[in-house]
Amino acid sequence: MLNISIKKLSANDLFEFLDLIRVFEDVFEMKQCQMPKESYLQSLLSRDDFFVFVTLLDGKVIAGLTAYLLRQYYSERPLVYIFDLAVQTKWQRKGIGKSLIIKINEYCRKEGMEEVFVQADVADDYALDFYRSTGGLPEEVIHFTYPLNRIN
View 1: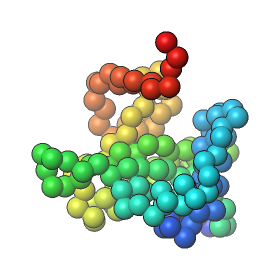
View 2 (view 1 turned 30 degrees about the vertical axis):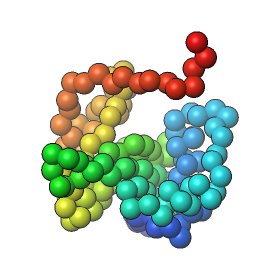
View 3 (view 1 turned 120 degrees about the vertical axis):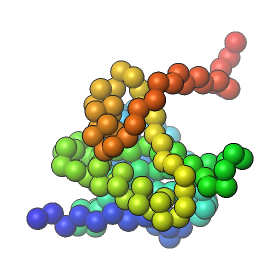
View 4 (view 1 turned 45 degrees about the vertical axis):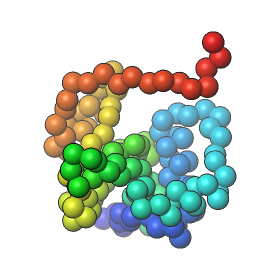
């Protein structure tokens, strides 16, 4: 039996957050990613509208997710947007990602959030299948971006 636990990070857990970012870099194949300053990451962990959950195997980060709380004006109950979720490749398809989804949903339900949502690229069949398998309800949307640092 694996010694796995899920932990919601607090402001005191910078090094576990750094380990999770390295998991993201590896799984998402982010070449030459520039790590922000530790003071900036520490300030993110201190916010009440930013959540980080990690999966630990024998105390080592092997998976996790980041999410943002979005306050609404149509409802007093906020939404939560899962920004990134990744499981180290060798631990994928073992229920670890699903347990992270369950954990954040339980946390958000307990805290009175209205809904948790996540985006997945239409071409990413693995992500689409994963989110469907966790009970996610797909919506057809088109995501527009406005890059602000382009040179015209």
